[in-house]
Length: 382
Ligand code: SF4
Image (tube, protein in one colour):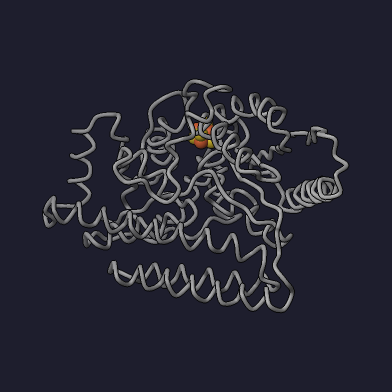
């Protein structure tokens, strides 16, 4: 068995670690690219959301590297993600790919079924103790990755050479991918923290302290975690001198949904439904309610602006987008919506980001000189 899986940001490092800890052969598909998307789009229904198209592209590319088994999480509730596993199985079979598809439903589905599938993937050579140990270590690695990523958000906005920050980030990811001990994880995070803090101190001494604009990124999990899908929004904002934070980090999602809140992950997402309650008091599938809750949280924390990103036709995020103007009005925080699909061009995204940042800078300047008069700044969605 050669297992593969869909790409989603840094998740590949965590999934690879999990399977390698269990001595299961794993094929990491090539990173998402135009080619991945073209391959997947050719096989997908036109109206399918972008993650499905990229997933299919990942599997086609992984098949070329010898993968024969796909692992994908399932889902329940009003979102198409719950159908992805079965749809992908049928599409791939019709296209002539002989894949076995193992769907891991979340624990709020059938626990017994979930355990059976995990046991099948891990094989008889691993005891349940070994499986739990591997899961725990993979989870810890995802927390370490999230910590580093958050530091990079701060560094991008402050270090003058953006390539320096990206190099720091790539080096850290490479080291974390190779580390297979808890001590190694701690040491890598400590080293990255130290080098970034030292560089920030140097920049402070040379140029004085900087208070960058802060933008909260919210939206559909796949889009906001995967830089290719979002059009590298976080990196580009960093280059514009903006510090970003994100509503969902991988370990926060895993802690809440996979470990049922027993492990909080980095930046727990538990409080979002409570924050969303006055605007969207019920679950609408995907991360719609969390998107609204995160917008409220970012607004209360004084963020200068918020950007919602989601794939075209994503139903939960369309519901959230219809509610966000109320949050914008209540907290006087500008909210912009970006919708992505296979026709989205990076230049278009960058132009809109530049315009949004320009608007926030002017608003911030006006606030400083006391001329805003509490005016609501509205930025057209689409
Ligand atoms: S949350 Fe949206 S983009 Fe993601 S699978 Fe569901 S409908 Fe598609």
